[in-house]
Image (cartoon, rainbow, N blue to C red; front, side, top):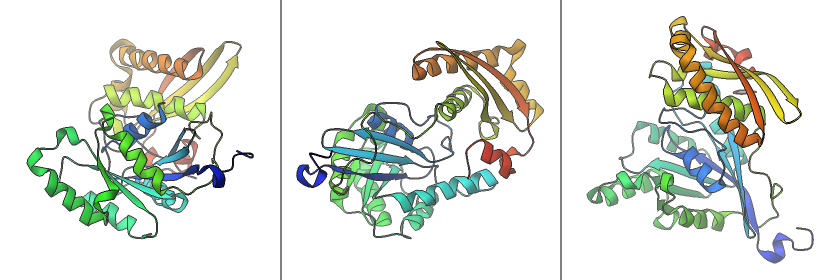
Length: 305
């Protein structure tokens, strides 16, 4: 934008930190706005384990969303690393977008997240009360008042949305853009994330497990890409699925390997769509007790620095 600088065109850009408790729809909202799957989604809490940047660029603005792990009480090294990722995002942000489950009254996790926000009250805030399709008409004013008071947000800085359907998301974007600084884009217009293809591949495999596995498995699963070889029109990928118990390994493999095959097929199809060419995906399952407490493994998984 050398000839048409932001100062002359009014172009706005900046970082927007997505904060909120687990499973309120932060990743779904960001993916919808960006128009690409940048963060994996599932109905399991704490699906997002590290900060992920999703970028949307138009002729008049660029938003770099920082999707963060849900605010929760950490009980493992992984949990502590996730909370630290959320805290770090505040330092980079120009605007805070707090996403709440608007169908419920604020709970303890919302109150904990509000404490985190009050550590830096200078940043402008926008409140997104998501899942409005589940909000009963008689509870609308009560819930709006409760979240507004908790987060210190006025009526002009909140929006009720249903991210999964895109309802009111355009109006939410208008609120956000109005708070961004007038400046040139932070990223080139063809970029939509800062995540590597390797990391996204590992996340897509984990997403398929989250969708298919029973409750005892999801929090104990991680995926590490071991091998990545590009061979003409084919990419050969080897990945290890980490679990904490032998019983979980048996679940992931399934009877005659059928569960693992199903996960691999679903992930491969989406990875091929992402990369734009054929993929050979080979998955292994390994028991690694207490991997969530291992700084080395968390570093290898890119969940911590």
